[in-house]
Length: 244
Image (cartoon, rainbow, N blue to C red):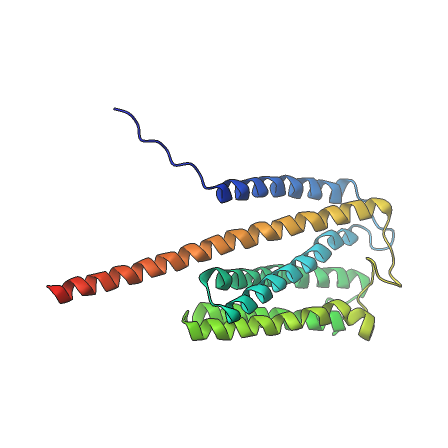
């Protein structure tokens, strides 16, 4: 008896697995370069290596906030499951990377400033952004999944994105203690080897954010299809009972 032909994997699955494989390899390479190639900073010592996780995580938080903004605006213009899933995944990404930023930042600050936390403009605005996206996720988890709840969450996603430029330019506009190192006047600068590792980390974290975002959108779309299938099954069962 001939075996049934196995279905070919969808091209998006192959592309996702390829992206995941490349990202995994880059993560391992990045960790190796951070700890064994990048020179140890003279003043802060080994603690300075937090920078290679902290700054790319902040950038990835911006990417998550941007994805949430685009998905939210798209959903307000024309509601679809895909746009809602993209916004929701972006908000979760912003919270995940925001937690890394608000964890690594105080560890850096303890060494550089002598305190874990100070109400620096950039720290304060980053915390505010985190609270907005936490509120978004709490609303989506416990506030229902109807059209009204989705639109309210989309409006919150647009509001959260308005705070991102404030975070980025807070150091230039309001000074504060946060250092300006990359592409900013008055920064301390980086050793050429540090720049190589940093920009590789930035690229790696970008791919990692893309993997997380893509995976979360896939899960959310599958959940939406399952919910609709359950609703259709219930409606079909009710119709059969009515006919009987």
